[in-house]
Image (cartoon, rainbow, N blue to C red; front, top):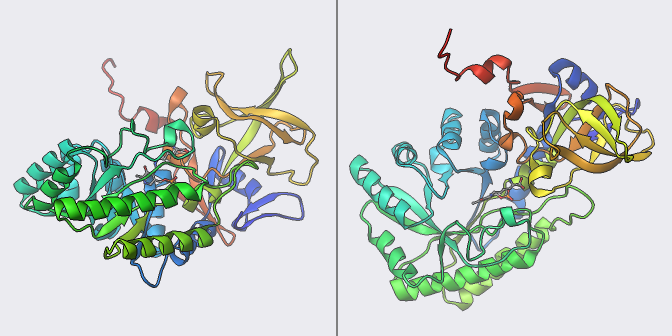
Length: 432
Ligand code: LLP
């Protein structure tokens, strides 16, 4: 991926930085992000997701990976930003991300979060449900400020992905169903609400999806729905946000979409169908997260031990854990692994890679072919740029690793490694 190379000593280099040097200078576990690869993905999205006939916008779903440096990068690349919590919003505001390019999501925004969003004037608040609408009405009225909103809806499309990351089954917790009897009167109510400006609809079918059919179906169903809203509620939908979810390569069973062709087809179909429904085509927005950052990230770990169990299973113990990458434990997801200091050595046997947590489920890989490891070797786990750092925890009071941006041979720390002091900084000493 991107600017990953093997140098003449058989060592892995990312963004022109030798992984051994990175590990020595910054310690392990270490999240290394290939900055050029992230920028490249942003640029590709902007170039693929365009049409001569439709207005379009690409919004980075920051839940995949967020910190102040990432906000800056996204801003420089001209993408908008999706945030889902007061914390993500705070990070964006701290980074001075342009407020009108912030989309505020979430299915249970608190009053305090809505106050910050309305006061700071974010571009769009994506309403999830009726109670949130009522709360926003109160907040806007009290503050005497207006808010632009999209309504998140559930079109009941089943996308084939892990149950935990599929979002538009009828039973999903997200959005209001487009089949609900009162959906049209609800939209009319939003539209007529004095301080709330209805701009359009949002729907996100799930994550790590490979079938273009699911997205095409979503677009088509949403356009029919937009037409029905127009007829039944006399409300014009100006914007249609189709969410994210474009699957990426983690291992050889993954078959990512051919994005340029796919987007060309998607935008064409939207235009043609809008015309056939006599609709003015809405502005089309998408929210990729994973596909911007996943492949740009690699996590480096040091091998601390090797063990063969009584029944012959071979373990490599590394200094990280499910606390810095919960994906294999949570979704049974797979990542490719290598020994960053011995990239040209022959892969001999299968090893399970596990970390430091007190759980048998602490798995980074259930089994991957690697050269016979030595203590001190550097394990590189690929495609950890999305939902690794952002889902990291302090389980077992492990400190979160540092995050490095590597580019053209230069490494910069964008998030410092946590210290033990950080771990206790909010603990209250009740006894001296
Ligand atoms: N928009 C909305 C409303 C979302 O909920 C999500 C992801 C996205 C956009 C971005 O989807 P992406 O392009 O990244 O697939 N932790 C899981 C993924 C959870 C996705 C949650 N929502 C994982 O590690 O696989």
